[in-house]
Length: 356
Image (cartoon, rainbow, N blue to C red; front, side, top):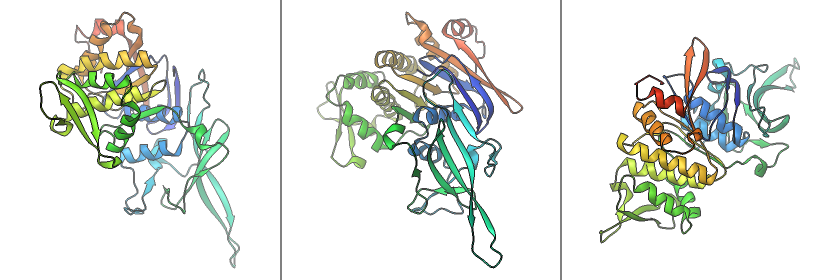
């Protein structure tokens, strides 16, 4: 389980350290304090710079180069990954590390690639690559084109170097604010259906609709499966799409939590689409499942209701050390974390002491 993390030169973090993570961690703070960036840094660290991890982060942010891209050939603008947005800076690397953890540090840096151009003047053209490393081992690299963007098509495909693709995968899921595609949910369901984990998913949906008895994904077309619910007393299945955004959000959270057994779940704005009256039950489910399936959870929120629900759910546990809240605060260019244990939340929340 990840306990500590240090970040250098990633997005808004020039130098950042956070200690003593719990099993379930709620991250709060004002706008532009780095909540989403912290989730991304954890994701890059636990996946050890797998190419698909970076692509998903860039796509979640919409960081696609407008000038260079086309619908069939997207190019990703990577300058925002680096603190200060100074991408062509070979001596300024991103480093994400956890010294007590067994996984090596993750490093992302720009390197020069000198190529001799045969011409009348025999000039030297300096080009750049972005290189990704796990510890001292280069993992993959991409050419950086003149505009500062990269692309993943056949001409600029990510080149795997010393480590095999299987060595880079990790049991982790990052859920952005606007949810994941239906394809992700379909893949998860294929591994959940007809197992004890299916019961946990149904239990999650019962938070909003107590009559939920069963769930099913229809059709063999991966991209177009339809989600149906069997409600007690109903003669016909009910489409999930007719039940509201809260039901879909709970379904996604439950499926992701049971899918990532022995791994890491990261959720941006976890309370999105959920009424405040359902959030305590949502937290109970996540806390219970995280302990049972050995899942570490990192989630963000802006919501006071979500914080109160988190505190209430923790208060009901025999061992409330399973959860912790971290507030990120910013002064000038420095971002610092402030930790609140469950016992401290039990004092702060009833007295309306602001922890956001």
